[in-house]
Image 1 (cartoon, rainbow, N blue to C red):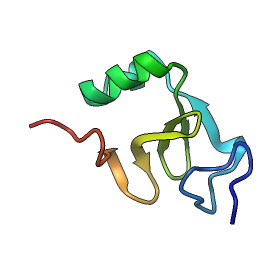
Image 2: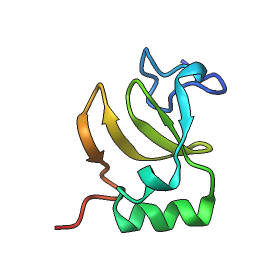
Image 3: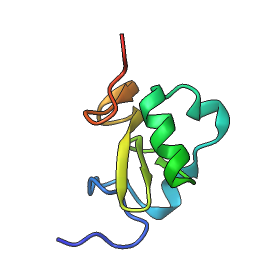
Image 4: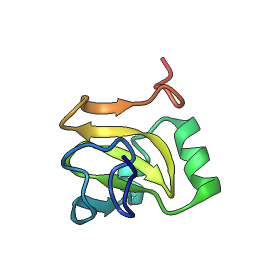
Length: 82
């Protein structure tokens, strides 16, 4: 199954274009530093309000407060540092 423009990169059932929002500075500062640096290089991140998927273009950065993985930051590529 191919993904349509504006649909969630994970293909979740609630990841529709009308459930996207821009990630502003207040939310961005809650992400791990490595994720913030990647976002600074690529620009304009978005987040799906249903699943929490945070992405830029076709690159998934992680998830934030999603209905699938729960609250907080989740990412294998950009984990939270202890």
